[in-house]
Length: 380
Image (cartoon, rainbow, N blue to C red):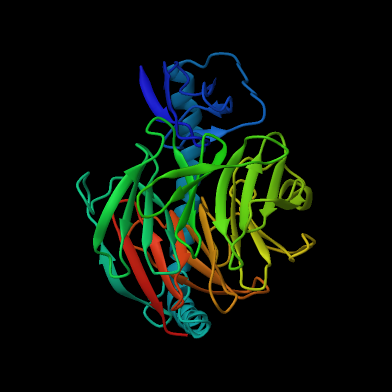
């Protein structure tokens, strides 16, 4: 018997590995159909199960097939290596020119240093369960006084730090279900997305202040506070909606099928962000793209896409917008930065995954990276 975390809600899933190392299960908590981990690939949410059971191939036949495939491949590799040896000086000169061009855009390509665009000016936290220590910090928010709220994905712990990263206190939410999203408004109210609900808490002590109600019912995955005291939330129950609430918690706008309509495919996990003008940004983690909407909810632009090139995403999981309207997207390559129109600028290398991101009033970027918080000061 083996166990993995549901990529939708984080619940533990136990399964018996089969002979082929593939298959599917259903999460008992969120009812998502999941493909099993296979050959180093993590479990994924799937819309349908397509299991193709073909005839068995004997070990001898498999060896013969590998022999017939590998011998011609080795010959091709040897020929290409010989040709590349002759072309290597030319390739190096072209590569240097291209690398220089990439570094001139915003301070570095995917492989470049992030120091020309952003500098680490503070880190706090370490691996552990004590005060100021973290095990799986994925959510982060900042209030108007600079207090920093850090939410752990499992266990329900929310820690409170001052603006300098000094531990103040901690409080608990639901210990059994994953903490999917966290935001703080300027008045010190903290909003937690958990169990499909958005619940308000008093940031200084964790006192529960009630849930945000939505006509569509429960189903919230992410939440972000807006400068005017409202909220932008990602909701999923068959449709991937973005819901806008005002400062009184009243539903004022819903963008129905916000990602799946322009992407023309199902989207089961959406992260949200907003800028100072009220524009809304939705990161579709399955679509591997960012979708921009104006304050009235009208679709404006789409950028990103699946891949490993600059401006493309691989396992994107967080999004934030700075005071200049630049869009920051965290994925396994680091934090990719785009201008307000979606043009790629640069990438910031991160020591750990950028699971959660938020900007303070000084336009400094704070990143929740599982066991620590990293602060970046932007140089441009």
